[in-house]
Length: 303
Image 1 (cartoon, rainbow, N blue to C red):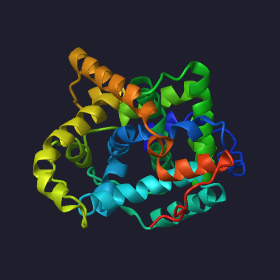
Image 2 (cartoon, rainbow, N blue to C red):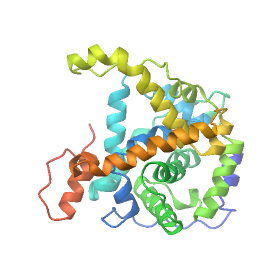
Image 3 (cartoon, helix red, strand yellow):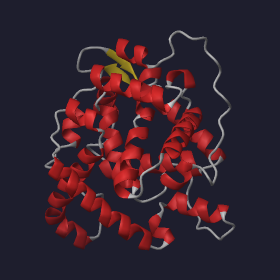
Image 4 (cartoon, rainbow, N blue to C red):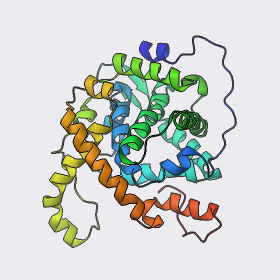
């Protein structure tokens, strides 16, 4: 797509090889952010940004099982994401596995244009959506990242791109270049695709996974509507304002105040939880291991 190639900021510069991927370790920004349970609130907003691109939205619409197996898909995606940051050498294999998985994903988008999941601009956009959502979620749900932390976070996302097989020439090199790229993407490429509308529909039917407790199954008809409304509200609130406007989503000053009140509750509550509940399983095990403490056995390979 023309807008994507212009926004990449490469300007026809000579291509340089990507550095050898390096797994993440304690002390990185992502090590602290990616395994925090509060990240679960931010993932839907990143997904909406991803599928607002017509090619990505068409790929998810045509090939994903998010309708037929939403819980299984979410679990597999979450385990994969955790492996990227906490899997050590297994992160590199997971990056290779994902590229193999996407080799067969192709088709035609809603405008009649051919797409392939591994087209560099599309694959890079999926990865790039993490940056603004991480920053917004930290600001609302934990603590704002200062300028140095935001810069470190972006450098680490480039490092994560190395692990996922995303060439640095396909990503903006700096945060400043990123925001120019992001603004161009929002203005020139994003739209309210069918998948965006579906994900932001609070009435979308979502069944419980097989094997759910009987009591939860009985209560689900009562629990699902308010949980769905909360999910759509937080997802909309964690989107960058320019993206909300582009997608035709309303967000008032009152909505922002409500989100900030919700965030204040989350900020006060999560630090009170035991560590095994504050962090997702792979992150908890990796943090314990890095500290030289006994860690629970967890399955590293995605199922």
